[in-house]
Length: 285
Image 1: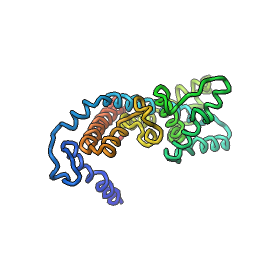
Image 2: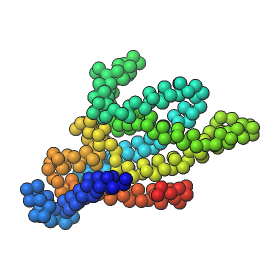
Image 3: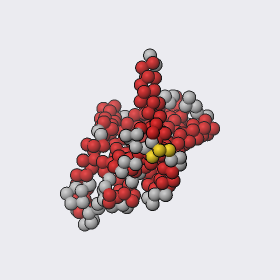
Image 4: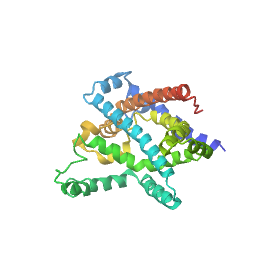
């Protein structure tokens, strides 16, 4: 049963790794991997000397870390609140409503957000106008754009993550709550001393898996929402790879940047697995 999956992973994940060679070449498509000029580490030197490289790296880390942080806090909070809802119909209805955006691509949501956040005709700015607040160019202002990315990502994905934490809540022994009530614990103390500790293994797992995405700030989202106006605050590693590789046709430099990103992500994943074992005594494998 594993053979089809192994074959697919080998074809689409391992064979393409031969392209890593391009990171050390001045790659020319007509010459191929075997005949392109070997330039050693010059592609990496070129990247590290780019005037906006470190700003792009900071943008990527900031946006990704904020997404990871809020991507943990918001679903956990919503799951705990939904768990307190007594009527099953209301609980299912709310759960379905917040889950729907997960199924929409950023191509669709990008168009929706552009219309909603428009400084002239957008619903958000029309609402702000009721309070005599000046229109805000959410997708064209460097001060607002990163937070627009973070909030829209959380809105899209928190419903999906909530399901994971709701499933974790079902594993908690109900007798613990009964004993807490007998001891006089209110709902807040029950949540703090029973619910959250009971969810902790899943929280640690999700947090650990998220650490590997510190340099993944969401290419689809950023690509569909950003513009040259917000390159200063919204340009990330993936969009820089896209422009360097596919627009400027510097394939070696783009591959070098992708390899740099993959190496850092690999180190973060390795460290996060070690921390999960040491701190929470939790093994993923």
